[in-house]
Image (cartoon, rainbow, N blue to C red; front, side, top):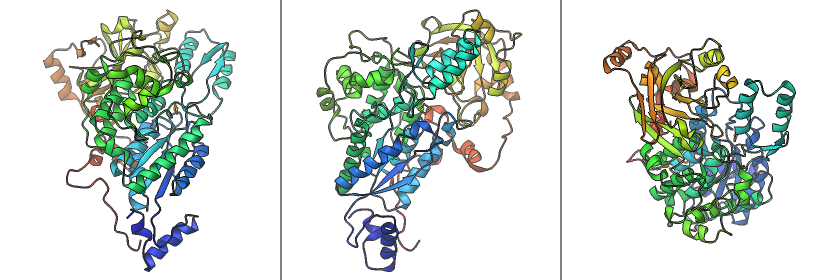
Amino acid sequence: MLRSDRWVVGSDEVALEHRVALRSAGVAVGPDGGRPVIGIANSASELNPCNLPLRELAGAAREGVVEAGGLPVEFPVVSLGEDLMKPTAMLYRNLLAIEIEEMLRSYPLDGVVLLANCDKTVPGALMGAASTRLPALLVTGGARPPCVFRGDRIGTGTALWRLWDERRAGALDDDAWLELEHCLSKGTGACNTMGTASTMAILAEVLGLLVPGASTIPSGDPRALEAARATGRRVTELAAHGGSPFAGCDDASFRNAIRVLSAVGGSTNAVLHLVALAGRLGIGLDLGDFDRLGRDVPLLVDVEPAGSGLLPDFDAAGGVPALLRELGDLLEPQVVLADGRRTAEVAGTAPGNAAGAIVPRDRPLATGGALRVVRGTLAPDGAVLKRSSATPALLRHRGRAVVFHSYEEMRHRIDDPSLDVDETSVLVLAGCGPVGGPGMPEWGMIPIPRKLLEAGVRDMVRVTDARMSGTSFGTVYLHVAPEAATGGPLGLVRDGDVIDADADAGRLDLLVGTDELAARAAAWRPAVPTTRRGWVSLYRAHVTQAPRGCDFDFLAPVDDEPPLVEPVVGRS
Ligand code: FES
């Protein structure tokens, strides 16, 4: 018996009312049920251009559901647009997760196709579906087309941050800036660099939550329609036969995802999202897993910001299946992917040899792992560095702190000519974590002070409890935990304190005596929240720290409670 049959099968007034409601929306259920009802959860929105390609793909997913004998039902879900939402789309990732979970729980659905693309929509949708364990697969909208600016092919995010530095250094005039704006305003789809959206789509494919080969298909490519169709078919088949991709998504799946994260030089945000998603499945990931599993994985994908190409180049080189083949025995072969095949099988049928944006394993772009996890007196519970996008000479560094206690203060003071800073200083931005932000905004790539930019400095050591965009770069220690707003040592740093960082040794220390630090801690008082009601209040009260993925504490699985507590199906 299908789950939806509980709503529609029967001859009483309740079953009739449910069938009428569905029929009125064009969903032709009969009194005997037996046809899987498949949700198409669509986060397309004009407020979020990254997700607009999903409008077209929804139709293809519907076709796939019908082809497999199911009944598609499309419904809208909140769209988290990275570029426009303030203070950050991350503040609402858990809201999307709750929305997906509760929509699946409360409606007569047997499975769901998750249409998501922009950074936080992918993990939010997956987390919500994971908590129900219903059959669910992801369809992404692909990356937007690259553009050409003054003869150079440029991608989203990374190029803008670099060109902004050039403009602040006086090397880019008003005309060029306007030209850049028009150049970047072309096409819909996700960022075409290895930002968070691309990273999470790739990892979803590795986890078996997106059909093989589909995560890198560019926006507007006709292959995306076939992939969406295949996804609709697969979810319907799984629903009809009682299967779920989450059943096969185990510890080994996450180990493979962490290794691939390192091989692609992916976004540091993926650390938070993988921990949170694994947590929904009862799998405990530790920050140390990312360091341990990623260290031996060479950087094989030449895409910005760790490399020089763009996401369509990775797709042209064969995408994830070709990368799986190149990684070979670094991966666990038995992991089940979304079409039911295993990792080794998909890797074995990937076309050609490593070429273009995928380099051979014996000639990697870099070794030593893309990420580093550090701990120490400044980050007792850990911090993360994107080593693949850092300056090698700065991986071991000791310098005096220049402290900003809020984003506003940093924006106000960073270009002040009187700021006491030089290229050896360590820029500290505190108060921007999950509670402090709130939502841990992507403020972590603290701008280089203008006077240093003008002197040719392009990177400095920075330390923060904020995140940074996957498209960002630089020697930035992110996600410092515990965060300043909860009393973490980052909030106790003062101008002139010495910070000692050694990424490869896994250390991040504040060289201040323990007595002095204890005195500062005793004098510390939490900031008074600017709001005490609504979502932000709920968020601050329940969000976990970065090493636990910033999920809500009450959304973790409960041992003696089934993943999907079914509602009573009677009169509404
Ligand atoms: Fe949406 Fe980058 S801003 S994917």
